[in-house]
Length: 147
Image (tube, rainbow, N blue to C red; front, side, top):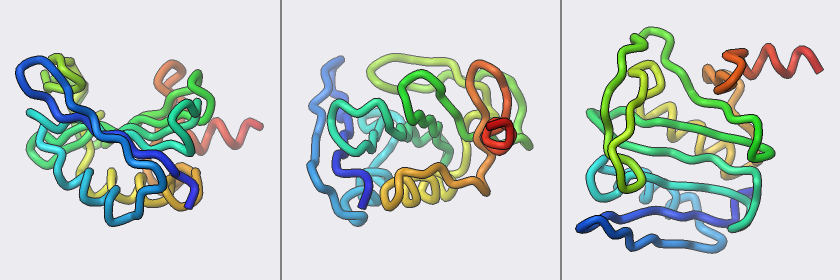
């Protein structure tokens, strides 16, 4: 198991009662993801430890869709993208505030589960999913091919 720290939020009246679990089991991770409701429970973070610069964040869920962002160094961020969806903005509640997300940045929960499972086990980003670098717009596969 690579991810030894899990954090999840729970929002009530503009305050969050966060839960942190050290050495979570996959069942605990899966349960935290299934509890995401886009109203009170909006964000789950997995990392090797609390202060790591390597983590995956899963936000959601809104109509069965989630945002998935990841970094290995807290500098280069990648997002899962559903290229069949539009760039139209959608307002979602996440982390205590309303945020705008392009619809294509909201992916099926199944994709979020796949990404979380591989990261949980190995610390890797699932390459069969469509990870796009947030600043450059380059895919993970392309960026790794240039190394």
